[in-house]
Length: 123
Image (cartoon, rainbow, N blue to C red):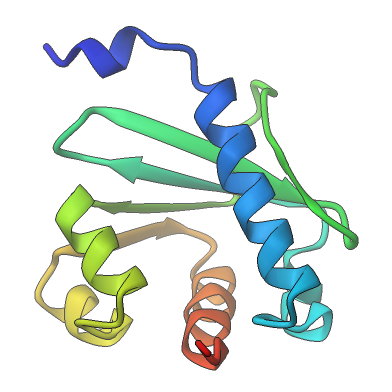
């Protein structure tokens, strides 16, 4: 069992929320692209670490989600899969079709997240 499973979820989820909010502030993602996420909760799970980070979007900002209700969308991959996605080494479709990225829950919401990722213009 990974020791990371024993750590509380809130501190890294807060860091993820801060990073996502910085992306909005610096114009990497438009608020309009995120509108369908309003009131929704997304869970990112690292299957190789056995950890998850949950965030929700209130229309203005992301925040760590500590509730007990099920998330609307779960995205599951390995740490290397998330890094490949973040560093643009592989696109979400390739990771999805090779089953290295798995989305469960609201599939329409998954498309919104995928399109928002594709729309990010890295400097």
